[in-house]
Image (cartoon, rainbow, N blue to C red; front, top):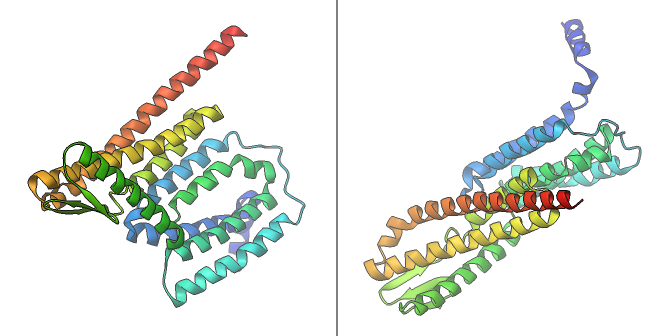
Length: 297
């Protein structure tokens, strides 16, 4: 039996066997994250990020450097030594306490260090640079620890509630702000995490980074598109929360629950369509400028 197994193993190309370790790390990493993706509404987009990351890697395979050489420095060993305690602490916390965003981030950093070390050891620095973008893109699917997450959400909630109150007053609707709550004459509307725009912001970041990598070439165009995509998400969710406040003022507070999810999906559609149109427009400008430069030369 063992002789037969050894014969089969010898038939497997050595290039495949050497990647079994990194493949196991990726499987372990994604499996751990999948529990957060399934249970945390704020990170259900993780499944899509994983699929898009796979596409970005596949898209780069044909152009991967063939003349790269494995690293002979101590970097792979050093990265493995740095990653080991992170993975160990994350697994001990998961077993002894529970899964959490902080635990996922700790494990992700450890797995990332292991993978970077393996790529350097098996292929080399040029290959690592070639696949750096999809590698970093995948971190959009990693839950953010509360110590970093809460300040972002609270800041967005404050901005949205302040702007909403100003817009409501400008349009003749008396309103005041108390923390993240909009006070109306007939009740109050809370600006929760969804209304703050955090989900649309995550989707916009994902779409903006993915599209810029695929169709835009100039660094200036990529930067402009990235920030314009974020602005679209903020504007869309400001419209959402303002609309819900107007409906609550005119038809009663109870109508907010009825239209809350519908408004959310509508703004998500608005943001997605806006990002696509924006990418098309910037791509047209980029192509026109390239054609003009070619004609002049």
